[in-house]
Image 1: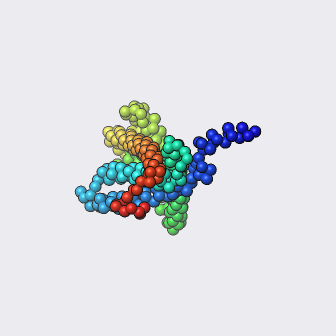
Image 2 (image 1 turned 90 degrees about the vertical axis):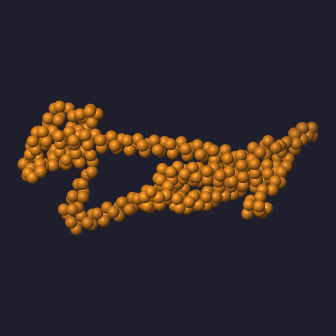
Image 3 (image 1 turned 120 degrees about the horizontal axis):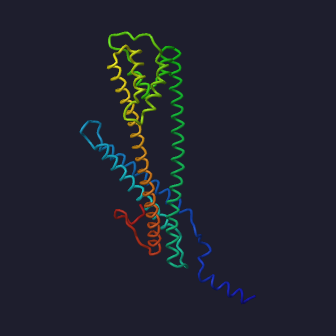
Length: 311
């Protein structure tokens, strides 16, 4: 029994860390997280002031929108990396030293505390961003409801205007229908089907030929005869109007697709850039925490603008 105790206790005492020192200390991690957040807020506020100083409401003055966007993105990336590095250094420097353990393990634990600073900051930032987005959506919904209520009140005061506003549409199909069914200049439109009855016909014909370079012959003839009957235009003028309206419809559809594709590419680049910046910031936090732990073990004095104090 005594031999068993001797063989078990001796190796443990030689390699184990002190019992009063924990493997993970949340105090330095929280301090580093708060420090990184505060530093980033200060630096971003300073960058906002610089950005406002560099732009101008007057033409041909100040930075262009593209230059301002590039500088802002670069500055924000630098701020994120520097803030995480300083927060990691604080966590590593303020963590308790392990006098009875090997240097490799101590540096790994220091780096792990820097990783904790990064992870906690990212999680809290995501939660705050999500809550902020939720609040913005709620505010937008409330604002929309207020505007809708005001519109309802206005419609009640003016029923004709309210009915027109409720039926107003700015889609490419409706606008194209307005153009092809406009009456001839100086002539009253002959009696015929209402515009509401003809718009679906135009929409279906345009949508069916959207991928074609031009309208199908049968569809074009049908639309031309409809325009002639509704507007009193000659056949040549009706054909010209139908072709112009279809060209506008295709251009509007292509413009919408181009805008959506541009937005998609911008979001894709922003997502990849954000992920890369966060990855670099993680490495910076871990390395800075290891450096802080090394300075702690070596009693290295770090001066800030010549000051021997922490501040």
